[in-house]
Figure 1 (cartoon, one colour):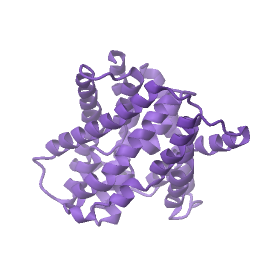
Figure 2 (cartoon, rainbow, N blue to C red):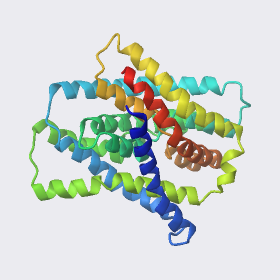
Figure 3 (cartoon, helix red, strand yellow):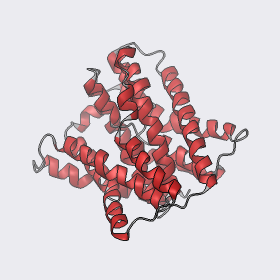
Length: 313
């Protein structure tokens, strides 16, 4: 994938965060604005984007097979990167900050930034969005189980209900029957679904801008633990994923689009879910916020560089 094309798309995407940052700094948005906007994104815009992608794509056996392969690969890749992140932090002093930073090293922003970037890089192509939706399903299961356990060290906090009953899962539950049955929805209804789904990229970035405004930027650059987490997430994670997928490709068929989609997702910065989980389970929320924001700042430079390897896919 062309370096400058990716750079421009990433930069334009990040630029969408500027209005949120300015409005929050000027006091035009209240303290809980990021939380309110996040609810709108997770429960309305993002699910409708998933549904929109399925209703625009014709049912194909090959696509169904690729979805199954995508689910299996997503699980394998995230678990493998989890072990890599754990290894990278093996010699760090055990602390709440270490647990959060280690979690931030493998939890990627597949929803807030992965989906918008994939939409920008592949305009009008619903296939990579479908793969992204499958990845998000697997990601949510691991977030409420593996990631919660990594942060707390206590299996009692692992939440199976939230792992399976969440907006992305419910969106797939609605979209898949429509997809399999080849149902043709009324044009006005499709238009409404599209309008809500297309709000996902700008709303995601506005939320990021609001969150950036709520933290002192100087505080982002004072923790070695946060630097290491960002390096693992933005450099080690995608390169390891690339090598692992190349290896697996010798044993199982992995289409170029599926390969590229997973690679792009794994190159994303740390997921905002890390902040949510750290707040829910009394982990180090300050470190979680720094990991999310610092990796989001650095990704403007790392993602285009990582995409240079796509010529070998």
